[in-house]
Amino acid sequence: MSDTSTRTRQPFARGLPLAAPLRLGRPSDTWFKPALSVVVASAVPHLTLLALGRLDLVMYTMAGSLCALYGHGLPYARRARTVAGVVLSMAAGLAAALVTASLTHSTAVLVAVGALLAAAQKVACDAVRIGPPGHVILTFVSSAALFAPQHLGQVPAHLALTLAAGAVAWLVCVGPALTRREGPERRAVARALEAAADRMAEPGPRTRHTAAAAVHAAWQCLLASGRPTPVRRSLERLVVHAEVAGASAHPDPDRLRAWAALTRARGPVPEPPPAPGAAAELYGIDAERAALRASGGRRAARRTLLRSLGPGSHLLPVAARTLIGCALAGYFCAALGVGRPYWAIVTAASLYQANVTLTWNRTLQRTLGNLLGVLVFAAVLPLSRTGPLALVLCCLFFSFAAEALITRNYWLGSVAVTPMALLVLEFGGTHPAGELVGDRVLDTALGALAGFLAAALVTNRRAAGRVERALEAAAQARADAERAYADRAHAGLDRARRALTARLVELREAADIAAGEWWQRALPEQRLLAAERAGHRTLAATAQRQGPPVRAPETRRGAVAPAPSNGAA
Image (tube, rainbow, N blue to C red):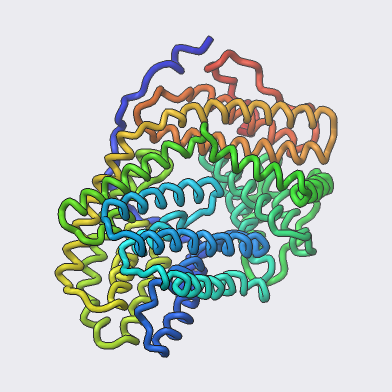
């Protein structure tokens, strides 16, 4: 039977923050990579069309150029496949939009198709965990194309322009592999070392979870990087040190930070001394890499992806929110006389995050950023109209600024995204400034209102069920790790430890998502705390590879396992 504490209900609607979502954070350590990539990928087709006198085609080449924003955290082998997939997905969404636009001029039909495309793009990007900027860029392009004048015979040529620009974006994204083949892996390992150092310096639940997630991300990056090289071997040994740092009897965070700085730099990768169990860990990573390359591993990955899109998927409520919110936004704008309400659809689609609280945060950020961005557009519009080259340079500048600022806070990046999106309309011909500004303000307000209304009203009761499944998966992974440790099966133990780390990361993610949802029962906080403590105790014991594994005592559902006495948690 469950503890009564797990059956109490939380308030239906939690308080929503106002100031916290707008605070600026530290920029990403790789902010300049997508910023420079999108500028280079856009400059080539932009300047080519400028030389040919066909800037009216910029919308189609920009669709391909924006694919350069994806995949910058991935190793180059996987990045090449990912960006190619994004280019093809962009072309598919654009093709659906252009064909629809050429067959009908009904605003009702166009809005419905735009909402369906936005929902499909949201679910697909979340299922494959594509990462920022996610589905927003795909939805921006397909929604804009729905309301652009189009003839069926023009569609193949316009898609060819998109694919050509996408090929340029692909080359820009994978080109750095020629000079620094292991760059993404080095950055992932450096983050893991820094997170482990922070955990050692300031032990606590937050740093413990951050370190586990960073180590897990580093292993995933190395597993996806392809054939092992001497540099990758050194990186694997560094990750082993990051893994066992929390179990060390004499923690030295400064040494980990020094290794992280050298790893991130362009010089040789540090050669650390052997860590406990390093040889077995490296044997385990080789076995796991071989399993992933095998056809069975690929089939398992496909089955996991299909399950995430199945009838019981936790992504379906988010898809329903996206569909309903985008449709409402588009129809509201159309009812008020906006001829091309695509920006309202994009605004609504951009709001949807993992839960209602995060969606509210994005609503504030998007609204503020768009309104300020409209003012910036009004200020730079006279300059952009001094000539075609000035217009191209303004678009390139705002493309760079958007990526440079968005990692500080989404609203700050939106200040640059909005004028860039409005300036794109100028390539097809000038429009009255007052009309552009007025429509954009109206679209933003209605899109934000309709989008958040759909998020608040469409319930996601599957979030709590996902937590229950994550608890069961974490318990099973902990049992597997303890059994492998008791058997001294080193290769199996290392795979079990990585699986347990992944389950703990997923458990925390599921709990964080459910904590920000409305209209559901309270979370089993005591069971979550017990599962996380028990899991991290097992990780600490297996990292030391000495003495018996530390088993968490069996407890009733909802009861708390005693906290570890040695501070390992």
